[in-house]
Image 1: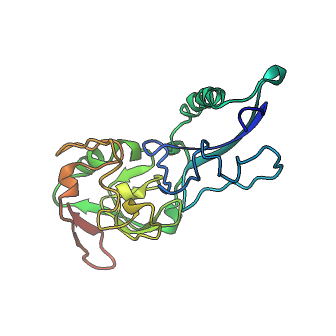
Image 2: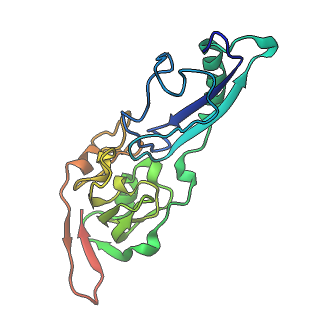
Image 3: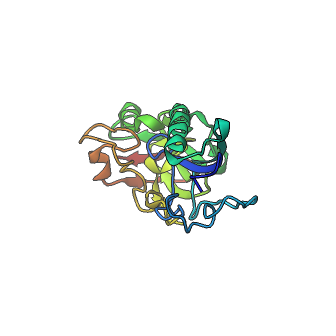
Length: 231
């Protein structure tokens, strides 16, 4: 096909685990374009195409472009790759999903708390850098909900409308098999690959190692008193 075609339809997927918080299956893609048996590239006579991404993808870009060459020159793989790299450089400048309003605070129960040990300032410094926007220390949030609808039992010490509540809340359930960070007592406290938290400092979307290894005790007085949290 590449030896005679002067135009080429290109379908592509772009994802970024670090800043877009993408979720995509390892088996999401079809055969490599060098595989001549792939049904969408086996000939150049087809006029109808159906392209999809398997699994339960989130925060990805599925794109299409039509490339052509002048004077009847064939469109070969090196030219396709060159054009795609130009597009990828532009796409890589897209802002993070933190710029999107992911807040679902109106679906949660939120109450102010009093810290017997520690302080609001201590909690504020423990918030992962990528989750600071939309997160306020000094609260207890029950049933936080992610933009995808995944619930978390509570967010100790904070209320948040961030795009990744798993970095701040505990008690997540796993309904998306391709996103293990949505499940567990500390859900996404570990952040993403490449995050480098220390014992006392958070990094990226990860909590500090002390937070990850800590225990949380919650004491409720009565229905008319302010809740108290020990961290």
